[in-house]
Amino acid sequence: MLALQKMEKGVGNIEVRDVPEPEPQPGWVKIEVKAAAVCGTDIHIRHDQFPYWPPVTLGHEFSGVIAELGEGVEGWEVGDRVVAEPHTLACEQCWLCREGHVQICADKRSPGWGIDGAFAKYVVMDSKLLHRLPDSVSFDAGALAEPTANTVHDVGERAKVEPEDFVVVLGPGPIGLLAAQVAKATGAREVMIVGTPADADLRLPLAEKLAIDHVVNLAEDSPVELVEELTDGRGADLVVECSGAAPAVNSAIELVRKKGRICVIGMTGQDEIAVRWDDAIFKGIDMYFNISTSYTSWDRAISMIEKGKVDADSLVTHREPLENWESVFDALEEQQGIKALLIPE
View 1 (spheres, rainbow, N blue to C red):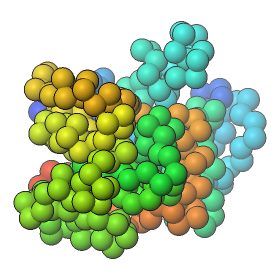
View 2: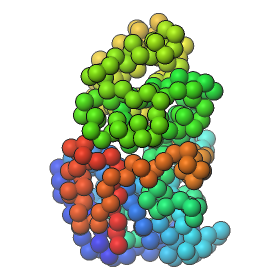
View 3: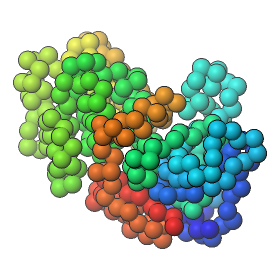
View 4: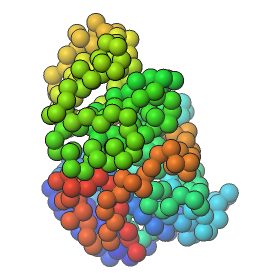
């Protein structure tokens, strides 16, 4: 079968190769991949900016159909439509695993960087990480269950949107657009999303199409002034920082109200950034730093997609075969796309 692999350390070193089909070990299943989404992690691996163990097949956001059951698998059948949590090889014995935080187990090696992932016709996964994909949800939307579950965990479960919150999302990339929808779906009164001139052609118009209440280009309007006007001078109840841009981190501190909350999702990619720490202290802000997903966030995310509370299909701007991976990666890096799918068939 064909697979898109990172062959060795260094910038680049990615190619489509013919590799043997994987076979499921006991307790695992073999999944025929129907759609696999490109994540920022895949881009970072391209540039040698994320841990990985080459040679390794990329891709961890996917949907598919069970093609084969490993020995001892119960509760699943060949033909079941599924998505899967990327928490493979968590030890299940450390204190984090035993508290239910398998997503940050030190031994975890997820598909797409730690073990072979979903940019291939088949991928194998531990059956305990599977979730059913309803028939009414397309495989394309199902491939976005993983980033949706990220935002459900971060915004809904940790920072906890409260009824009638005024929420500001910084960064209208895929995660920001999903976070804005999740905030609305979990009880926010109004949601504002803030972007830059680079977002004006594609991302901000999509935010308007998704009926985000306030769509702001910071080159044209002041988010701080707008938030003060819309909240009677209090500030936002919750700011969700999705951009990873250092200036946006300080904007989050400026935008949030006293005793408000900041949900941190975006990674800066830098060793250090300058933060207005004392301003955050004087406001008594609660800050939530996040990574990956929880078990509960997956079923909630799938339900939101199924019920139309999150429009995942609208984020898909590219749908290409594996062989076209390079042009797809380039388009995403040049902000000429939002979410891209690679189709292994």
